[in-house]
Length: 455
Image (cartoon, rainbow, N blue to C red; front, top):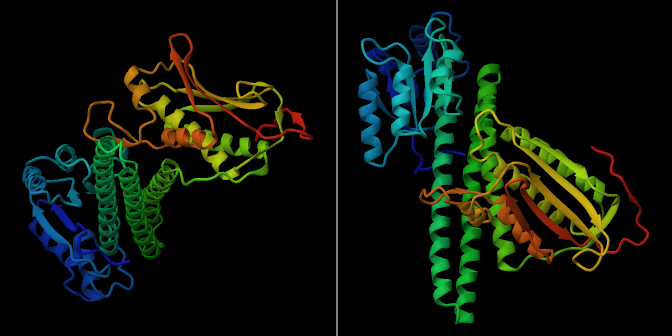
């Protein structure tokens, strides 16, 4: 997939050597040097031992017309980034040399640039004698916005870094834009719906418009994910002979996965809120479902720095009647959302514990056999603001404008409603927080009740 006309291809080159600026322009500016010229340039620029660029017929093999701005010192680079931010034309990425006497070195420069543009993608060019990897991380922190190129390296590496990181920055910016559009549109629809609550026909028309818009927005959100995946595939093919570069490029894959998951969540939430969703009843293996949820919860907890355990308080039916996809989605979103809730603003060094306790209540509150699922977080006490916003798609409880999308718990709430029940939240000193739901397992006639064997 080629670059869009709207892509941000603005690059900042920060190096105290003016000849290096010209070298970057030749490599990234599409001037059409021959392979031999590129090889010679690579030797001059990156070291005599740098390997030749295999098959690089021109310097613009990606087909991208980059817009390059140069700076000789860190302070000058900061001025460029400030001006770009003020003009709403930020740089997509920057190549920053470490040694730039007599001013700031590259590490100090990057730290200052990120204060102005936290989303700036950066490649720091360094020799082994400058800073160790751990020293760089100590000063700049662990982030997916920073790549380190050890000298010597060749022109193809520069091209691939530029291709991958500009694609990553553009996908990130598109995601933010689409989320803001969805948020603004949703807010306007809520205002209109309140004003027109007495007019059922008009309200239905606006509701349909909302559903149509979210479907279109969902389709638009899928484009950045596909773009990352396509660019990543292309970059990986070129970088196959360089394990370190290939490993770096593979690290971009979660960006596409996160975008794809966000699209699916928005579409699912829209369908559930519209009332169009239906349940398909079937007999399903309940223990297989619990094993899958245990694996998902453990994986998500590990990712967030927490621990997760799934327990049973009583014997359970080995099979139940329900919609496998919807039931799995309910459990998965409830578990993931509670883990995220437990990990938000957790004290440094702490490891939240999240437990899912499943039991069978004979003649429970639903007046028949009920599956009871309790997600518990010992020690977590929710504030009134958290209780008010935990089931809202966009969390702005910290007072910031908008808020990050948090769709796990909103989806879980809508899925419980689809199943004809609701979520109950209990929180307080001495008991932590518990989210509880009772579900109808259908007829248990002839179904064995037993203890589950953990996955």
